[in-house]
Length: 391
Image 1 (cartoon, rainbow, N blue to C red):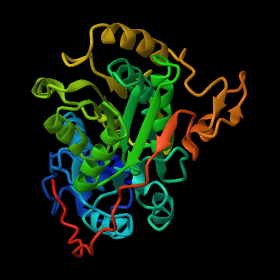
Image 2 (cartoon, one colour):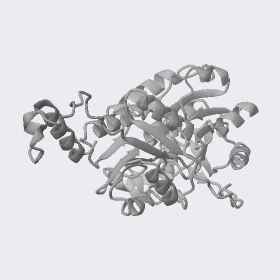
Image 3 (tube, rainbow, N blue to C red):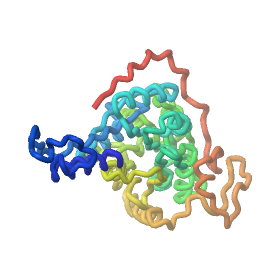
Image 4 (tube, rainbow, N blue to C red):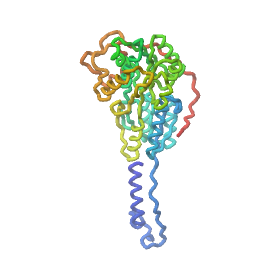
């Protein structure tokens, strides 16, 4: 409820308690003598229900990270009085139209629930100053945009260690979706984690989005000699395809109890955002919401890693425990010390440390990383999105 509505509700409550004669501005003389009076309502003022809309880049039931975010939305909403709804499968070019649709349906808060929208949110939000936005993927806030980001490269560092330890070829593959959080930094962290196990360990990376592209990317990585694949995709297809081919892999969503169904998964990592969403809902309810900035990490429990699974070699868990504790405690300086690019040129000296901004905006790969040509294919003409609102 807005502050103005709260003040109005309070005034109505006072008027009800004192009677019509006690309300300033009442000119009906009959109210003072009891003539023509109407029995006062004893019901409490009805509070306005706040509606929060989510915009998803993927399918809410697609089995990947979008479905995971949607489940986190539902979990948070179940612990609050906030009403939520969503539109899924929205392209970047359609983002503004999706915002308009949710705004017309009464949403006063909108969550841009994918990093792919991070560059368009601010411009669209500027046209809707009466609506507040939460942008998953932005690290700089504005007047009505709350910037939420994550640093999954921390999990990538641990995943690289686990993958290399379980590799017989000292070569790890990564399938990365360019729409995920800081995919270049993630790939580099996997390489640096792998090199904790083998100094000369190498990582081969391929970018892919659609399921068909992912399958081709996995095949190409295996052809390069990679015997463990790390998934960093919106779709769950990387895990499904590796499992069907008998390839060891690291998953990137919360598999929970279903992890037992994957004989080739050595571990998985995931993001827990329901507590963040719930905190946003509480601030909205209390009318204390302010545009701010938040970074999800292993230290604050947003980024999580699983235990080593049965497919992992003995000793994997001990290594993961040691490194994860250092990462969570801020003692693992992933992008500190001497860093070379793929040509062997020194980018940072021994006593240097990359800033957050430099890590977020990395456009180069560390030594030991090979990036294959993209497997992304031009999309066919999509049908016009109907912007169907769902709950």
